Image (cartoon, rainbow, N blue to C red; front, top):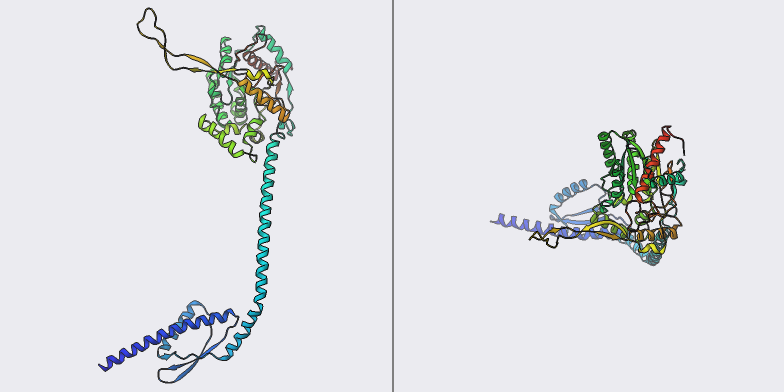
Length: 496
């Protein structure tokens, strides 16, 4: 029994010694950390009493070894201290005297630290104020830059093709065109039946069912093979170029005749892109191309709406995306491809071949005050099915549909746009395309002496002047001139 009590007593004494040693280690570690903060690394000597009455003097330094070595030393030290009594710890006075000067030094330098802190705080406030001023200056500079870009608009881009290096000159064919137009009005039609005539509509033509319809009927009555290209007008230029390439190949292989192209507005851009991208496939299938009021160099209307870096650019783009993509179910790239930036990029990469005859037709819109009240017939709307009066020989009620013309002031809108472009840029235009941007380098340019807006060539006006030619006769004169240019290239006729 005594052995059991002695064992319990030794175990209790060991546990209490270890607990006291743990507390002393914590205190000693805090003391050493405080001394290290003052820049002193002392050697602390301690005297410990063993359980057998002897006193052992030890010295301790902060460990300067790796983690693994320190842990091993710590384990061996704990093994040796099982029988050591650590209740008495003696710190030599020499180490205390080494700490006192450091404390005095820290006390003397405390005001210097305060001055340095105050200086840093003041400099931080100054730098923050300078940063705020600089941010405000940058914001003002960006605002001024956006305002300048908005006010400048397309002033530097209009007519860039005429100043671009390496562009071939144009040739004036207006006089010959007017002669052919006069002959056509006198009943002399010389357009041959050896070609298939393809009419290519422009932007938003899918929502105008009368687009080129009158011209196609006029050509069909003369016994000419004429088609209206079925393209998605609100698609990108490259997409429609591929569609037209396939369309031309189908017509050529089906009829065996070369194809004469006449494109209006964006339709001319699509046709020119098809010839530029797929000329190796179409050079023997296309006889000529007439671009009617086409923004070959770009249009300020599209550029001013979609130009980045101007005031309200993001909001304007969202509105156009909503109208074109959501309402019309088209592609915003159809409008982007008509900007000056996109046209410069495309023309630089893809050169239009001059091996076929090219005609550029452009006109100037009328901006007189009376035009603002002009209405243009562009479509028909079908009313709901309405009952018609009964006939005398029938007891049933007839049900039929009624179609009424939809009148939209297209001419008035074109006149307003033309007036805007003339006042802002000093440029003559048909309302959407300036005269300088419609000239294709290396082509024969036709400038009629009549006031024609952008929609006149494809939509018939309600008020017709019998003394003036209509759009059908103008298209026939353009294609007749195109045939003459082809014959001149083949050496069959004298030049203009």
